[in-house]
Length: 111
Image 1 (spheres, rainbow, N blue to C red):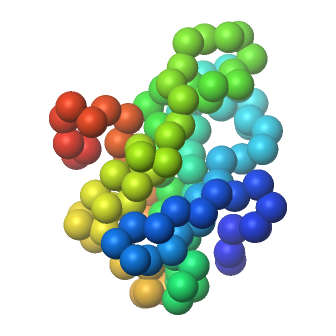
Image 2 (image 1 turned 180 degrees about the vertical axis):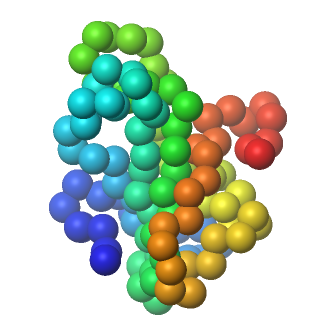
């Protein structure tokens, strides 16, 4: 299954095109910070057979209780994609979604 073009953003990393998207509306758990949120990523040039799900450890910026959050930047997404590729995400191989933590800090590398 691919990510809808509407509402997604394009990103090019080392000559490869990717598309990423955050859900338009938070789920109940995301809105009340019971859980972090996720960002779906797919490769565009050769369509992904395996979607990358980047999981955050902080609340959505549009959470219901105005809890302080971070903005999601293309730089964070690019760093997360590069780390996920190093740690085993193979978008060309069919399978269930590859779950990886979102790189929210550039001081320390992601796990």
